[in-house]
Length: 227
Image 1: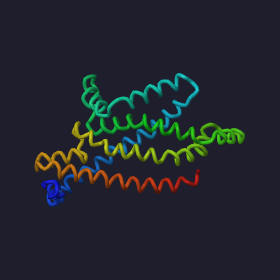
Image 2: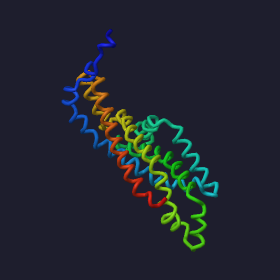
Image 3: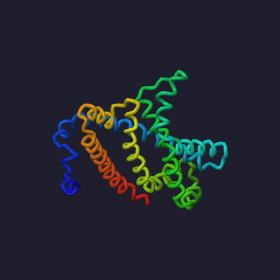
Image 4: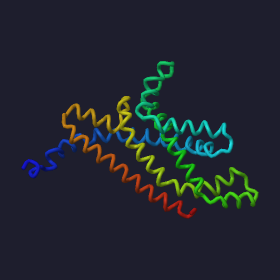
């Protein structure tokens, strides 16, 4: 009978959520900053790793494979702890924001590298052969012909990486980064209404991901001319 009479208002206090919304939203800027910096690092390093991973020289290929394997096989939280709590033991002190940005960037680079590698490999080999016949250099071919086509293929999985990055920034709360989830935990400690606050922050993360999906659609439309 209690289940039949259950109402959403029993677990979500809309008035309390509205009252604390501005404080929680103040963490969005930090969440996006860490996500964007991490993604920028990941994109740059991921492209380098993808090229090294596809190299015909083992001394380029194997270090890239080991790095990718290590990062994909290491929990993000453990890596954050290594950067923030472990490095000071050898004299390297990073701020919480710096440690989070670098950590997310280095970790996401492994996943981005595999996305880039598969996207580059999906471009028809004839494109390389045609460019070679036109006497174009490797880097010119890569920049002008291959990357634009590979980018269109890579946009959906790269968007997923960025979405996961945005959501994973909640882990940065454990090293005191003042992002969305850390702000939410502060409110939970003050109001003792964990359910309302956690539902609220879940809706905020969802809204951010919806916006990212919209941007993805626009990017796909823009790069579709290269396919």
